[in-house]
Length: 343
Image: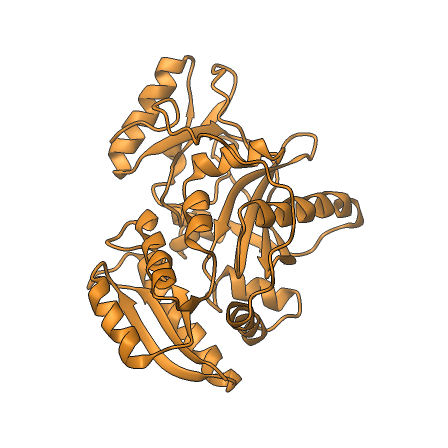
């Protein structure tokens, strides 16, 4: 039996929907730990940039493990990497990925460079403009932050694309980049302790022809919106899908290896017109609320939420040794103005 403490984001008085979801997630994990009965539960506490306060809490409670649900600090996703770094200096075990893995995966441009260096198929930021649509995204923010239909643009020149990236960066107050828009099928592949456990397809139903099929902020968080009501998860695959599913499984497990991911992760894919899969994003420490996509997908595959939480805890308390897998190291990670325009 180990002593477990849950840490999560400070929730503002008037939280956005995804911020409230972080608190709900902490409650779901708390409920699972209590129902498992295998651990001494120490409670759940919000974490701010006041790490001295966190240090005093840890020294008072002396946890064996932190269940890390901190997604952002000071309302900034990229600062969410600070807590794992702090816990490492305090020599306290925690769930989820390490500081290095979180830093690399949290910066979508860096992650793509690492993927390409290791021959993993990812949607390109190919700037041969004029024939394609582009999606403009925040480099470091997640939960579909800043994503709506206007994030998909058609441009005729590099200058136009640069301007659109700059405008979007200012609009959402976050560094942005552009990648090609693939109008194909979309999949989520969930991994637990290095192996794929569930696969889902996102279906966009009855979308108007001119409406981009993107899982944007409204689709994810506003339950009564057109996007949410017409965007569903499917777990039913035909025999002809098996080859594609196997490809994505192997790619997702390779992503786990090259980024040295721990605990749990989700790899998102889009396919092209030939049904070739391309990585959209690698999500380390994705949301794991029981009533969210994570819990619903587990249920669809005959797995229980409590089982998954227990597996995450067991792996964090007794981590498996790293596999000896060849990885290509990128000598210099590019964060040039071509990929990121200042706000």
